Image (cartoon, rainbow, N blue to C red; front, top):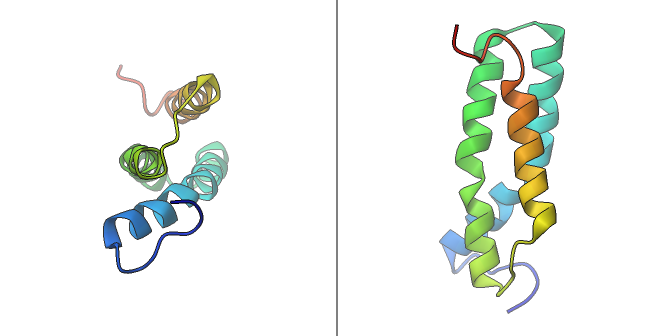
Length: 91
């Protein structure tokens, strides 16, 4: 099964859409975090991104794909950027 999933399979369809929105939400969170506009929004966006990541696993599983080194580096990089600011770290 390749390509866009059908709406008749809602879990696959929603996970496909949500996994595609991870990068735009990440970029918005980074811009907001670096501009110091809203700490709460930045923290909420970081948590939302964490909750969005498992949708990639559903897409991988349903399409017989295997995450490789790039996926691990992508996740590690996003987590490092999101939690490298002092307002996220425990004091």
